[in-house]
Length: 132
View 1 (cartoon, rainbow, N blue to C red):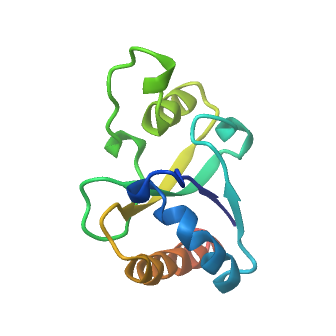
View 2 (cartoon, rainbow, N blue to C red; view 1 turned 180 degrees about the vertical axis):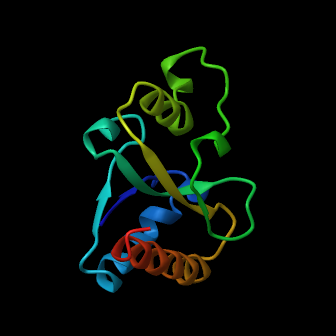
C-alpha cells in the first residue's frame, strides 16, 4: 500500500500531514509514504490513489472517497490549478480510477490527528487485504 502525502511546510494549517509523516513511517513500516506535490506526478502513482492531505471545513479526520466531493474553483492561472482540479482531470482522461483522501482538519493537534489518521490507515489496509 502506498499513501501520497501532501502539504506545505511553510503554511502551518497545511503542514499537518508532513509533520505526521515521520511518526506514521515508524508506526506503519510496511506502507510506502511518498511526499509529492499535488499538481505533479499523480498520473505516475497508479490508478487507485490514497492521499493524506489537509482539508478545510472538517472537524475530524475523514475519508473522502469520491472525486465528486471535491470542490474546484475557477481556473484563471496555473496558480489556481489545485489537487481537486487535477484529480478530476485525471479521472476524466482515464489516468486514475479511484481516489481515497484521508483528510486532516487544518485546526487539529498533531496528537489527535495522528491517532485518527492511524485508525483510518488501519481500516484502509484491512479493506485492501480483504479485497474491498
